[in-house]
Length: 293
Image 1 (cartoon, rainbow, N blue to C red):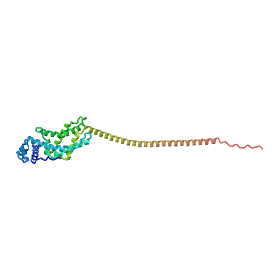
Image 2 (image 1 turned 30 degrees about the vertical axis):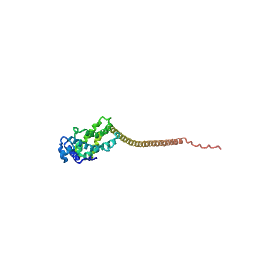
Image 3 (image 1 turned 90 degrees about the vertical axis):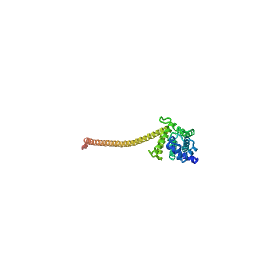
Image 4 (image 1 turned 45 degrees about the vertical axis):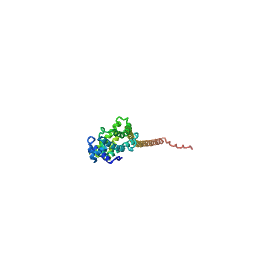
């Protein structure tokens, strides 16, 4: 994080003290002598450096805003809205840097982001504000344009307001003791905010990929069940085939046995017939004639 610019010691003391008092009481609730008292300088010395309270508050604003700009934008990773990993890395880096600034400089963050400065900001302060917002707006527009086909995608200005409001709300709730904002909870909050603005089309594609994976898994399960069923059916068919073959074999054996039995009966009958016939038709041998003398 960039440090404070080196300036005259008393000027620095006044700026730091004014930041603390403005952050605590607001612009309209702060009197110049109170700032001088906090800086441990006389009111005349304060007016020597800053001719009016309005000039003072603008100097305080620009001083703190310059440090915030350096923290957020210095060597910020490039954003490629067509690559979700890079888009998330860009947003996460921005979120973490904002968290680091709020933690390191709570008075500056409270003064900058929790108060309405519009009534007293001069042109130089407004230009500095734009120099912080413009790069974020342009990159955010590239990101939200990727979600242009989605009906629920917020425009870039709405997305920035949602994210900024979410972060400020977290810091305020932590300051008031409503929650403990450690690194882990801040990172989880950032992940939730990223899901809120992440391009819808890639996310829909991811959902389609998940559906395809689920469908493929279900198909694999069905195929496995079918193979198991086929294997079981094959076993059943094999068993049925073996049983049918056994039945056929038994039937054939029975027929052979019956045929053999029939043949035996037939041979026996033939034998009996032949025996009877042979006995009845057996010729009695003729006795030789007696020859005459």
